[in-house]
Length: 442
Image 1 (cartoon, rainbow, N blue to C red):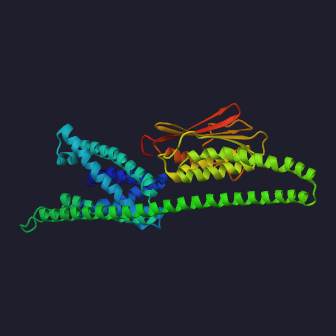
Image 2 (image 1 turned 180 degrees about the vertical axis):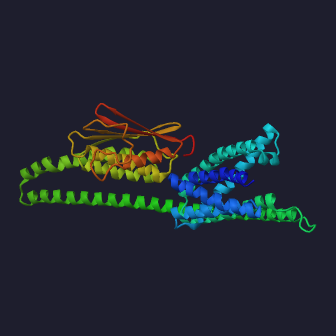
């Protein structure tokens, strides 16, 4: 009887440990794994043997898993407790799924499953199979959803989930282990009903509290977005003001030079000075302004602002800039901050690629062809690009301190279902095209 009990305890304990390892994502060596399983099996065996209360085995499992979780992360006790709760709940759910399948296929009752070692081990195998699947689902949620929440939101969610997990276990344990009658009273039904009512009330409260917290987080997020938009706009205006100050300074210096010739009555010198300095300067300003004037069709203030600043900077560096925006662009279904970020990254890269090279040129165009808007940036390049690595984090041809811009851009594009990016090299130009569909929200 004792050997049979031992062999019945070992498989579930191994399953508990497997589920725990999947969720916590920490690799334990063979020695630690064996010690952990023994720490669960030995106390559970003796407690169940002495008291005949199977529930005590779950208590031992919970304590052992909490201890191991705390060794991995001592700072977050709530999360460690939740890590210990999940394998037990997953095991309960998987065990019921396995038992139901065996019941349907073999027409075997719960008592037959437990008394026949073959059906019992089949049930343990199904428990492990479904449990691993559920564990990976929990792990995916913790990695993709939970970690994106800020710290206060994580703490609140942990509390709600932990209380819910505890109540779920209480209901399950009550249904399995509590006797139906004590001194003639239907204790089990009464306790079970009370727990179900409490669980229902808690679920309503938890959903209400979570919705309120979510709305609060959204309000804070919207405020952060508005602040970021204001910051971007302010930075762009500051840069524009600085460019205007430099232009005024250059104009004053040139006019002072002309004034010197006029003051001395040297008309020939004044004419030569005008033809040599002022006229080319004026022609360049007119050409640059004519080019930048094409941006007037972009009716999105944030985008227009950053384009003006970046392209003016390129012109100041002596880079030829060609702009084509024939249609009015008053709406692009893309987050404005992210749109400014990706355009800023592309233009910064184009300027850096062209700076210092002869015959450097940047072509910028926005093409509207319903339902798409295409943002096209071409720049001359001096060496071939490695397209297979261009979006890798840290890849750069600019030296240390660079290599994150296009990686960040790709991350922004990938999270939007209505946007994609195309890259190619053509006739000595590096071409990047951002395609945004206005037919659906991003």
